[in-house]
Image (cartoon, rainbow, N blue to C red):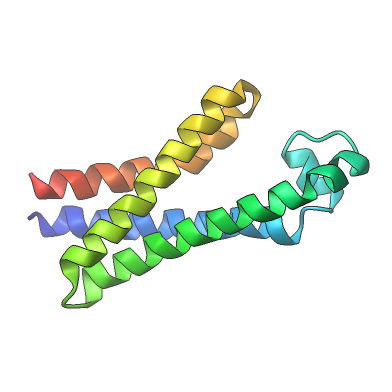
Length: 133
């Protein structure tokens, strides 16, 4: 396997994980702030209140994916469990990429957010998959 691609893929996975922790914060902690819910396309505090349980739950999905990417990258780079780390990191970033794809297809108005959410996972997955070959 190509070490440079593995290290690059792992670093990108960590960055994607950190981004997803940021999304967790917005959705699960800061959701009721007008600046936050407006960023997600909502028009009123009432809309934010109605969608709060959904956003809260979705935020935790993002946190779990972020944790998977970071833990996988750490195992890949700093442990004897390289194969497990590779699998965990790749699974997490591919889930992130698929979630960004679903967001783009289901809400074209949020395409910019989907691209922001999916670019780091795409690059990480590409590096990790190319490292295999």
